[in-house]
Image 1 (cartoon, rainbow, N blue to C red):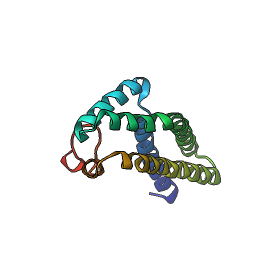
Image 2: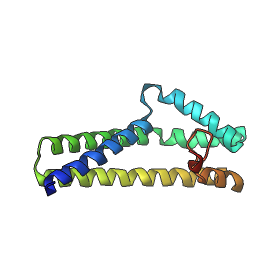
Image 3: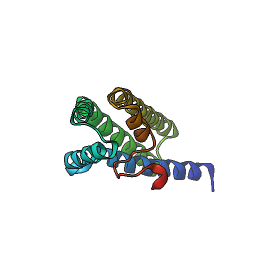
Amino acid sequence: MTRTSWTRAVALAVTAILVASTAAVAGGPHGRMKHRSFEGALQKHLGLSDQQAQAIREVHVGQAEARKQHAQALRQAQTDLRQLVLSDGDGGAIEAKKAEVARLLAESVEMRVDTLRQIGPILTPEQREKYAQGWHGRGRHRQGS
């Protein structure tokens, strides 16, 4: 496999993974309903009080618009990258778009860290430990999946 073909294959694989993860985060047309279901399941799983659940909801609501805009920018950058690679685009343009996608992904991580920093003080030490073990909204831990 040539270096160019290998690079394209890797870029396509990474892009496919990123698009799938972005779509999962975005939630689609029923995202609000899924989010409410997630909140209820999280409240039950962690044993949150109504006040804790409301405080966490307020954190998410406060970040909703920024997250939505960020997800749209990430999806567009991933689409642009995919189109550049598939159309045998200029190497410099591909590298620039890869850098943009990487920057947006890093921003996603920072947004998640900020959310966790805001949610952490709302939880009891036991709830934080349980949440840190890999809560996915499915009522089980990551290792049990």
